[in-house]
Each structure stands twice: as structure tokens, then as C-alpha cells.
Length: 409
Ligand code: ASP
Ligand code: MG
Image 1 (cartoon, rainbow, N blue to C red):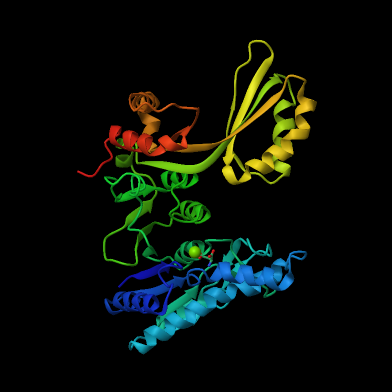
Image 2 (cartoon, rainbow, N blue to C red):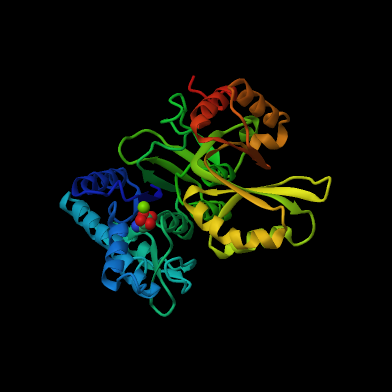
């Protein structure tokens, strides 16, 4: 008998029928003799609808307090736990629902993005020991004073990982609407294959470059506490991808996967002086406008004058331009700004890069042979990212995926 924590996302519990499917699946595991804690999200679309309702009642001139937002949003998951437990009980199983607070999930008081500070899972253990399946609300907790908090969008993943750590589960399974982590998005690269395993760091790098499988904060948490977990589909019985600490044999694979991210934009400031304070004059106002930037490239200057480029989400481009316009004059007479969208990012990720030379060279050679122009380049220890024109991203991804031998056998 093992102790399993499972997590089912919003799509997996999106309708009454899907909740019944999930209930059956949970019951199957329980009947095989396992103890099961199943974390569920709000039904698909519910959290967004609650957010809309909140703004409908306050009107455009007011924002609801974050305290009340948490009271509101926590109801999405509370609905699902009750329905899932009812479905299991109707099928002849024995299930009880627990809210985050009831399950002993304690957080700090930062409403809408609270951090878990402590878990006292005595109720979880008590119900499990009595032979129950425990259905646990994702995404929520309580402060020491008893206020309801939520953990940030996508936070049910974190509930599952943290609870798995707290009760020392033998297995943590994240059930979702994809079969696992792929070498690349199969809609772009049909020969992409599902990975049997991936390290925490690789998954984090892939997530930050466009492969959104689960909330990154949860992966970081899992890495920190050494929680191994499996990402797999709630719609079939295929084995998923095991996410775990790295092993020696993982290093022998140079590239684990290729990520792509569309809808990027680029801003270039030309003719700025190469002296202290320039970068901060540019990025201060951008940060002030709450724009998240990604790659930054500054040229080496021979003449004391240089260019600085950075990328950002296309949706933030107008905000960044508005923030930068007043700064240009301050930076010097000859300073200009060029803004451009229609850009995409392509990244190759793999811990094997640490011990293999020539990965960048091979990637660039492949792109050149495919006739794809590289605009910007950035690297980390286990990732190389380039930006290319968005209309070439699919060609680029296919060529690189192929060149690194990632296709299905
Ligand atoms: N229901 C929350 C959200 O939509 C939490 C989750 O689904 O993980 O963000
Ligand atoms: Mg969700």
C-alpha cells in the first residue's frame, strides 16, 4: 500500500461528467489498496468568472480588497471538493472533502499570492487512517489568525506538491489535459516525443521559455524539498513524465527539449553613452510601468556609444514605449528607440549542455541551413535562447528538434 497525492486541474473537473471520471479514477487507485489524497482545482473557467463578477460589482473605479478576493476565489475549489467527494460516495466509495484551512495549510498574510508557511496535516492523516479518500481544495490556505488566503493563479499544483512533502507521500501525480512533458509542442513538431523523465531545472527552464506544463513556483518547491512527481493525463492511462532530481544518466542527453514562445516584441535604444547609469535610466522606468522584460543585450562599444535591446511580451510593448519616451532626451541627442513585434523565442534546454561542447554552434548552424535569421542570443548554463521572426518559428523549431535527434524513433 502506498500513499498517493494526486492533483486534477480545472479542465479535468470541468463538467459533472468529468468530475465523475475523476471520481472513478481516484476510486480505482483506492481500490488497488492505496491511500489517496486528491487535490482539485476549480472547474474550468470558474476562477476567471469569479474575478469578472468581482469587478462587475465594484465597477471600474474601485478594486475589491484582496482579502475579499480570497474569500471569493476560494469558493471555486470548495465547490469542486464537495462535488468530487459526493461523486465518489455515490459510487460506493468513502470520501471526505477538506478545505485548505481544514487540512492545516497555513500561509502568510499576502492575500491572492500567499506563501505556504507550515502544514499540520493531522486531519488528513486522521481521515486517511479511517479508510477515507481525502479530497483537498487546491490553491488555498489560512493565516494563523484564520483568514482565508489563496496561493496565486495555478496554485493547486503547489497545494499538491506541498501536501505530498508534508505527509511524505510515496508518489505525487499531477493529472492534466496533456500526456506529459514533450520534447517540443506536438502541434508545432508532430514528431515530438513524450519524455519519460526530466530534471526540475530543465522543466523550470522550459517553463520560463514557453512550455507551460505547470506553475513554476510548484516546481521550485518540489526541487527544494525533493518531491518527485509525475505529470500525466486525466483522460487516458498512458504513463506520464517523471520530474525529479537530476541523475548521471540524464547528463548524457545533450538536449532534453525545445521550447518556443510567440507574441514577443523587441525594443532597441541606439546611440546611448557607454557610462555608468545608462542601463538604469532605461530599465528603471520600464520596471516602474510594471513591464516584465526578458532578454537584454548590450553591445560592446568602441567609440563610447552603444545600443541596448531587450525583449518583452507583445502585450506590454505600448506600455514600455510610453514609459521610455520621456527618457530618450535625457539619454542624449542622438538616442533613438525602435520597437518591433512579430518576434518569437526559440530555446534548447538540457543539463547535458554543461558537459558537452558545441551545442550553440550546432544550433546556429542548423538555423542557418534552414534560412532562419537569428536576431538576439542569450544563454544560461542549461539553455540557449534565440529570437527569430515569428513567421519562421515553426521552421526553426522543427529544424532544431530534428538536428538534436529528439524525434520519435
Ligand atoms: N483555480 C485556480 C486558478 O485558476 C488555481 C488552479 O487552477 O490551480 O488559477
Ligand atoms: Mg487552473
